[in-house]
Length: 363
Image 1: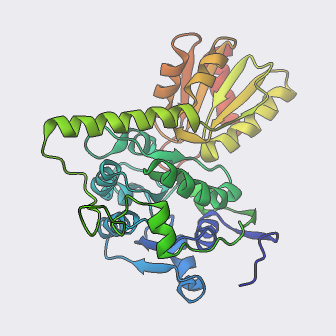
Image 2: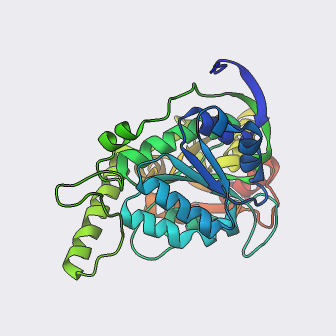
């Protein structure tokens, strides 16, 4: 197969995810169309990777079917993924908590739209809680990556699979409708060969296709009827999440060294905030940006450090105020923390952010 991985292409964020999935050795995609992420499935259908790499692509009958298909595929040690948008991911929450409890790696892509309920097809960041707090039952976490460009939409597919298999945990790319629908230049990752059955057995001895001394195949389940054993399983999960918090925090900083004020924003909100910061700097206001790339694990320690030396933190989100709760917990009262957000599919402008910063801290 020819590889044009050094070519600069122009495509939507959703299309970049689909092309990256084919290239990074994904074994299977199972999904259901919903705006604003339908191009992922449409692109895979157009590219027909089952003819080139052997990747399976299935339009399932529902989001519930999709998540259970990747439960089975991930349980067999396969690199499998699904994608949806906010209300569709809400339907997947039972399957996601089952996968977290059974320690099954897989990739879930959420290109967010406004809510609650069916809401609007316009962009939103209203699923922060759903992703980072877990919409299903029990004490569990999903690894969450928040891309801010089409390039990161492509890059994070392989990273999400890497983290999912490293920790045997579901991973999510939490994008929003802006990043999913916008077109930008992107360099796609190189092709990776899909693993053989023998390689999967060797790399994933826990998988259902693996074998143990006392049975022909492993049993994958999140069910445990013995309370002591269930508590032990939960303690193991919490130890794993603690390790993820220690080792996998990712963030990006812009002009924070001399900043009097810090804006914390992720995804498309961070791009808009970056423009607001450049305007502030041109007018003599020292503002910096912290962009969390991992929403779980969250860059708590870095926010603590910044809060000790700035006059205020403004959290900018396209929602009513969700990530701001984590920012306030991280700052621990070291400086004032305010929130600015828009809802209903309305996207803030740089001037909106500047006005909010001025009103909160400089009025």
